[in-house]
Length: 106
Image (cartoon, rainbow, N blue to C red; front, side, top):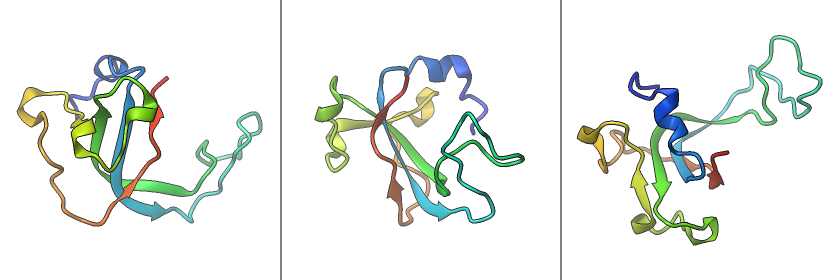
């Protein structure tokens, strides 16, 4: 994670819809655990072994409603940047990628 991604800067994105892109990675070294009340010892708290790794871009939807955010319309998104020098710049890598479902940060 970039050093300028502080929790205060991330908190300002609450309520926004994000589109996360990167390589789809299956982490078979861990176990999935969908029951948060019964964690598996020494395993991450997650319900899937699929990850997006490495993340190549994080975008914020410009629209107000989730239903208006179309991952296939580039004009609906702006690159999440926490410094002005990288605002709206394309991701550094041009590789095959996966997309995480659109979700609102809570």
